[in-house]
Length: 171
Image: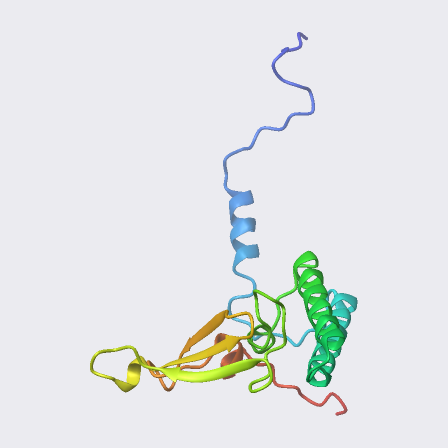
């Protein structure tokens, strides 16, 4: 028996009957008809705990920093560190948390203390659907949110079909 140099002995040739393709299609379609399950454990729980702790510290220090520069610096460093930890661990922060922090200077945005709030309408006809909510930080960075275009709009994270209903397992 002569060995073929281009083919190894342990090489298997696909018979072409499509069994592998059928198995792949079954695996892809497994979760389509089922309802979403409540997660039993939280992945990266220690990172989430660290991020929430840093967020709470940053919020607390920003509330104390009326005219105290050290508390403001501490608050900014905690929130900057929180942002770095969440990026390194690839965590998805809730949009409410993202909205309260300035992207440019990492300040916690307290309306009246270090942030001003106004509603602008730059349209020529002053239409209600063109209203824009503006938050201007102390660093002159402006966050703009369209508030007049669709009053029934809900964020993806706040939609009812995306929320888990907690069921009591005491039965």
